[in-house]
Image (cartoon, rainbow, N blue to C red; front, side, top):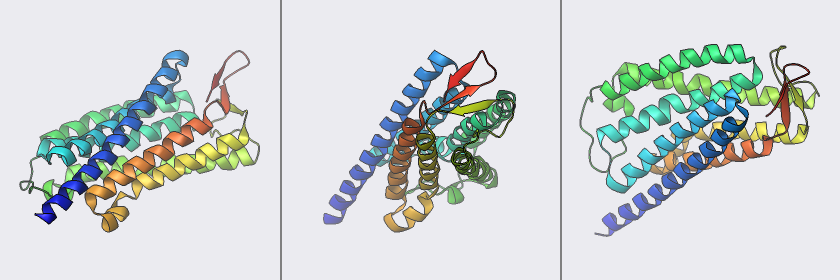
Length: 258
């Protein structure tokens, strides 16, 4: 009886962490969507999509901790939280560091990849049933293709975000434009704020990528819930710190805030 009470308390705590992460992701998405609606910057639109995906994964985790895992809920958690969210977040970095033309081309490929990944994961047969009270493992439930999509969709984009944040910080310290492309130049208005925001974004991405390590110490449920909440908080803080610290200039007549 005592074990059941402790397990129920742990599930409630995990659900609280996951629910808080979902609320933060929704707040993040609303802010970036409002900024995109006002200014029409492409990176803010893809950040909105990324935060909606983070919210979807967090909500699926909250639902599972509150009511129990099902195959459908795990598939939603997997495709939004392990395959697509970091990829769309990385696309925002690509827009900021390169040209709009390159970003649009990669967005077209990412849209096709996202549609393919959703179809594959939702239609993937389960190799076994989910045991009540366990945190499902993609390795035990799915075949090779869904797991390859997760590795490609999360590993490579995480490196892009971390590299982009560090590159931007390095360029700001050197007092040069943080962009890689020579066609879209960003004029830094507040170098320290931009550098700090980039460091926070890189740190948040590292935290989100450390769910496996944390799960080994806290358990899978708690590990994923904690890393989601802390990682999103750090990402949100980085975004708020870096906001309006630079503007993008494509010519004398146009300029856009970061």
